[in-house]
Length: 284
Ligand code: NDP
Image (cartoon, rainbow, N blue to C red; front, side, top):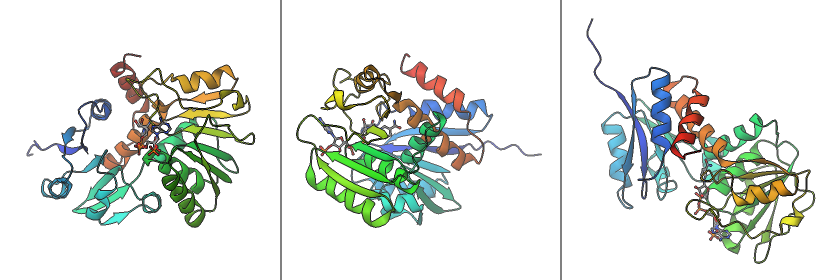
């Protein structure tokens, strides 16, 4: 019998990308499952994405992750999109099915999985989101598609925030509203899930927290953060002080990575191995 010396290739395209730990997590998962896959962390400069995506096809790569600044531009080079990716307008993972490129957005799905693992459902809930960038779009759209009743978007820049609210109101069943975030944000009292989807608090700026009137955080709220490094962010610490249950950004990161793993390999992801690997990388 002849031997197969060819590995399946996946990876990530981004710029900057040198400090992205996803590859270590995915390679540990491939090893744990005995799969001959390799994950390459590749710097693709702005303006070079078309050539890179042609490369995915030319080299028969099984798939690719996209990160800053390629998540929106990549739509031009794909053959098919998931329903959520169509609404979000951004893709963070691609599967290559025999030369046809299928794009999905697993950020919001990873977020929902981390809530589900903590016993939290978004159905019928009021979700309040800080920010209107890529993570906020993915989180709010997936929450809306999963049955959230009301979504409040607070953003420091009006146009981006209003665009996201318009998108939610026209493309999903949820009722969305925009709140201008120009002073310490007062969390609406009927909020069930309060989500930081801004980049405030990300390493190395771990001493920063979103400008919130933290006394408006109540103990009936579930408070979540996209920040994964440091996962015990100041934002979550303030919420804990008010008695709220908190969910950190590590779960979202691992769960979106696990979804990508499964979509590429059609194998269940070894989530525990992925969590341990990331914790080790972050020195936790
Ligand atoms: P974007 O740049 O698309 O969005 C960032 C958002 O944060 C924007 O709405 C921006 O507002 C807002 N913002 C930035 N600084 C401030 C501030 N000082 N006060 C209030 N709002 C602010 O980034 P992404 O959405 O892609 O990523 C956001 C964060 O989420 C990053 O830290 C990223 O690492 C993390 N992330 C985590 C994931 C996980 O799996 N845990 C997955 C994806 C992202 P404006 O544009 O109006 O300035």
